[in-house]
Image (cartoon, rainbow, N blue to C red; front, side, top):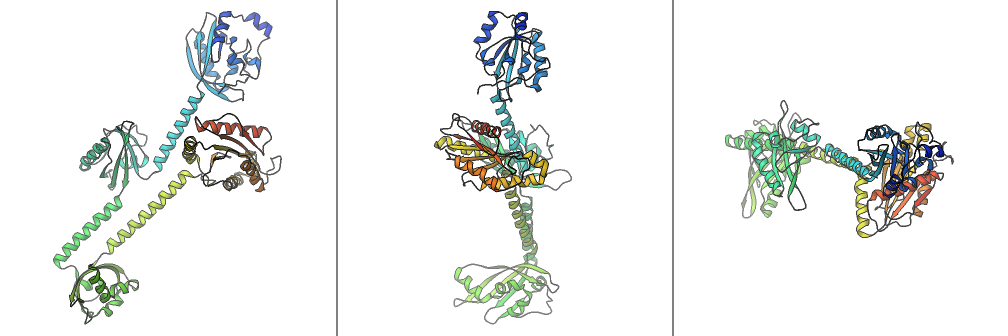
Length: 582
């Protein structure tokens, strides 16, 4: 992009009289020849910082000729905020030391662009000033820093512990959850061995998993973290290799998901099974026997204890057992004959879980299993046992509820990470992701991509007059209006403040949608005392990329320039930037 330089007055005031300046500031033909031959902006300055000679690349770009006229202070071309450091740089160069500094030079539009400005002694009385445009590089660096920050924020949202380690197991980065789980300060510079942060008994499995990832395979192991005065946490660690173009592992991504509740449930289940085995050995199971044909039921003392009844008052039939069962489970627990016939037909075992109700109203879960005896192919007898499994069932239910809550929380976090909290349209994070994909599709398919920048006119004045709550409500309504115009393939995002971005793949003639943008906002019929129409309006700028090349940021910049023109032309309108392709 060509630099357009505009004049900003410095404290020294306007340049001296031209005739007077020429007589006091002579410059040789050699200096003029040098700067004229240079392809980038260049000038020859005297030791007081006044321009002695300047080339066409600097002169032709200015709207006010006196800014680059002979005798003018070169500081007038520097962004006011950078003039102090520019003056320091000039003082160093004036002391016969070649020096360079990055600063902003003013452009024709009144904005500024970053340059590397080099000041070198040319003669005893003069300095050579060279300016190299690095604005695109600086903006790219800022964009990369923003993306890196966003990625870190996304990782910190996760409840999982996420770490990036070297192939040798040294920690490169760790999100907040990981730091808290391992007792590492969040501001740590890391660099420590990851396995040293884990208990000794899990390190061998960890080393094996790292070795698998180092060999380009996915590693996995069950781990544990222990922080003093806190309960141990159990983790399912998954190690994924990060490969370079040659398939070599350059780093390892470690995702540790907490499974403490599952571990405790499994441990409790194992303990319950052990107790069951011990109970069977010592007669702790409730044994029952049922004569199907005679409807005769006999149970031992442990069985009565489980159902909360007195063995001194025995029951003799399934019908007498019915009132002890929870009303919702009576059918499955008492249909012994029908169930036995089904089991014989399928070859399955008799195992059911149901609830019994103690006389005091307490509900207990029990598991009953039995062996079916047959005669002439008919079920005639069932002998089995009953065991109280209330604690196991409740733990399983609690685990299911916890997993469901975690699922809901993760879905909510996924939505929050992609949606603007106020307007409901895509946020900047989602915009960067989806816009990059739309741009890649446009490049690969040749389908054009239109970018529309929409800005609410005089929004600051609206907020000042009607209040921020009304301002927030207006932004929501404008966002809904823009969404009403889009297809499923289109993208509407909040770009910042009162500004929205619309990406319209396949749109090469955007006039219709641009007209509708202004119309739907007018149809909202929102009062706006500071608007020349008395109603809320928007301005829009559009740029269309065909046979796209380069970066999508170029297309956004063109749309932004068009938006600026729409504002300059009076607002409540749109402008299409018909400049060359992005």
